[in-house]
Image 1 (cartoon, one colour):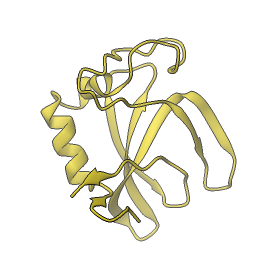
Image 2 (tube, helix red, strand yellow):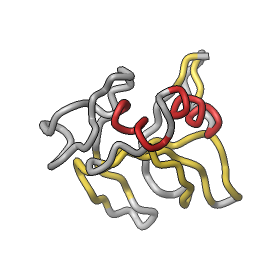
Image 3 (spheres, one colour):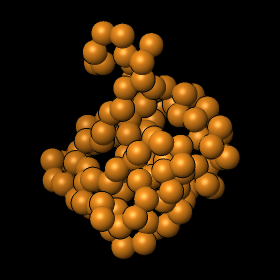
Length: 116
């Protein structure tokens, strides 16, 4: 649940953002904070030219374990894929691609709210 006056973006809103940034093949780099002080190793394409300031972190698997600190940043959308799965967008340290996919709703990802 988002604070009053805000909402969790839908998969369609993520798609609109990614399209506005040039498509999936380059949008991820434009969304990631530049450099390797936060993103590990390569941070391929990370320019933050969109000022979205995507940060890396770990995520929680549906079994409760955490992994991949510094390698990925994943954000939930408000869109369900099927009853047990929801859509998310992901940034990867080794790629400029913005990945959209779905996974178990019990997985722990970030949420970035959008002002209504």
